Image (cartoon, rainbow over all chains, first blue to last red; front, side, top):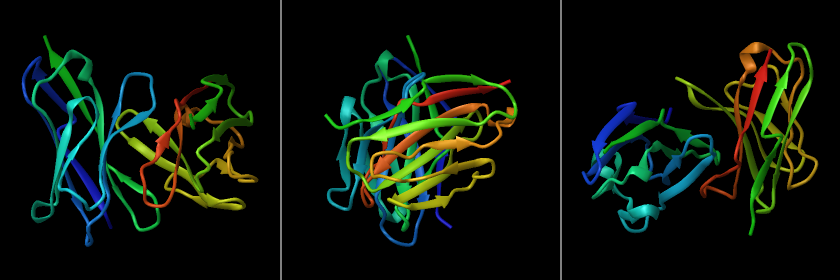
Length: 112
Length: 111
């Protein structure tokens, strides 16, 4: 069965520092991959998606992610964290039945 | 602009009552999904639909039902609300293997 693993339920970085949120998936075929962000008391919003075009995907708010098939990874990065980036981030992979398989989420904490 | 809306945004009900949560999308998407989100459990799929008159059970479907009479709406019904169903409920829609678009959520409290 497909699965998505997000390393670290909480990640803390200083404002201005690099953000790195890890996502590894298990899949026998190249999937579609997604990163979503959820701000407090809101729904999930798409940050970016990989659909088998360029392996480096740029998203909103300065985030990007790189698809590495050999490592089955799709890590999310941002060069310089901002206080407004504090939120929960979810990685997801498409399933053959149109569903998404979700990671458990990583809460990003920004220290001033 | 196309959107997906949920109502009510907040609901308090009593154990044993029937509750219906509404979900309406104007994306004209065929796929619609209901999730619940609880601390420590992430997003869990309750029910989903791939089109009118199609409904399917997800991983946590016990005590819930849905119906799909048109493309735009997928109401979620709790037949007899239980305290274990206190949660935040999200509706989402998509087309094919593309991204899911989420509603703002409904916070349900069962007393």
